[in-house]
Image (tube, rainbow, N blue to C red; front, top):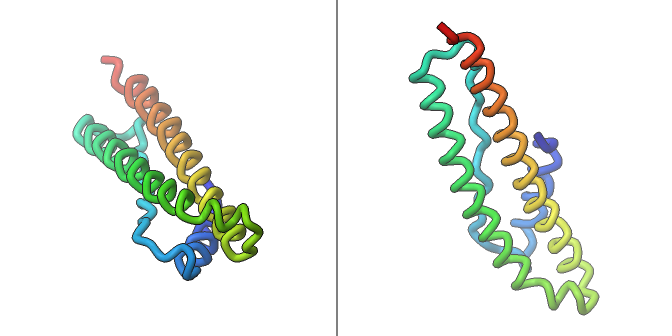
Length: 120
């Protein structure tokens, strides 16, 4: 998962900038159940949490896309604050994609562990 301190700092910069004032809310990454020990109900609950996170992350990135579109031309014109905010929003977008990919991989591993532990 991306460094939470870095993401927090980037988000603080983005949302404190007057150029970037908006309502983008980064969703929290849910915990992945331990598939080797979890019950079926816990695995299903984990799957629902993953799907909800994915939907929220998609909405978050949509919000960031709107922000990026709003400041792109200002950043391209050489405004240093807008350029820094554009980079921070781009980094936040990419970190969101990476977090979603990592969560999906971890949950797939949990499913494999669950199946291995429950082969009877």
